[in-house]
Image (tube, rainbow, N blue to C red):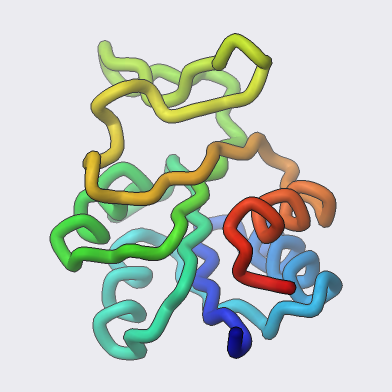
Amino acid sequence: MSSPRILVVDDDAFALTVMSAAFEKLGAPAPLQAANGREALERLDADGGIDMVVSDIYMPEMDGIELLQGLAKRNFVGPVVMITGVESTESGDAPVVAGADDGELMLAPGVAPATLNVVGVLAKPVGVEDIRAVLAETGLLD
């Protein structure tokens, strides 16, 4: 497989830097970056060919949940990983992130469009081992 094109989306510049460095340390090319969901969709529309999206959930302007809806409308088929640094997992009255039986985080039922391949939810801070596990699960990097 050719080098995967990964888009990392987070409003925290430090988190973008750390996640990008983790991907590069594991042999992936430097990811494309966006500061919110709107920028991510613009990047996807302009660049195309993005293989994977890693996005924060809580961001200004357009959050990660709205980004998921935009990805679904564009028929994005690559793996999507959501990340969160917020301890409260509630958005209004509806849960966004839930704990699975094995202690893993997951999106609450109905949050992500069924057509998307959401492979996981990671808690910040996201480190090299988290990224390694995601890449292994997706098979994007040999």
